[in-house]
Length: 216
Image (tube, rainbow, N blue to C red; front, side, top):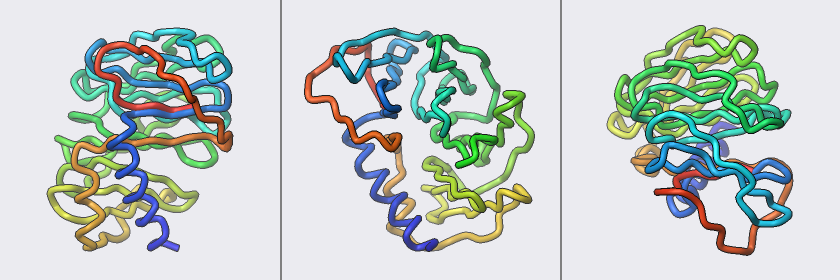
């Protein structure tokens, strides 16, 4: 099971390096534009930009909560996470995290978000109900990619050449894998995530400066 998750981490990292930062949620896709400090919201039915949301400086990673209600954007340069209400396309919270947040993922039950902070070598744990950091977990050197199962969080650390495994019940690192090929994928990762919808846009859609990631 763990080996399968590691493989998914590697595959997702490779795909996202080509796609940029994208998360697709049912009818909408969310694209981070690090050059203009905002997120483009694309209506998947029309392939048109429906909204542009100002977030932090150099937005990078993006993910959507399992219920589709909230979009989380990790802003590398401003060292915070923007929480966006999907129903209104408005930022409802700005959460200070560690240095250079590069990866973000939400637990399957939607209760917790995990943010990999590349330069501070740790993971910020966010309570999604209060939008506050409840724990900071030291991991390896230069963490980037992050993926969550109900019981564990997997964090790919590029410079230390390993993957930290965090227990969700304890917020403690329970293991470190020393499989070299996995972390190497995550140098300057371009993460991608999507909902169960398999809709794909077939048109080229103008966005803002330096689009990074998409979720939808």
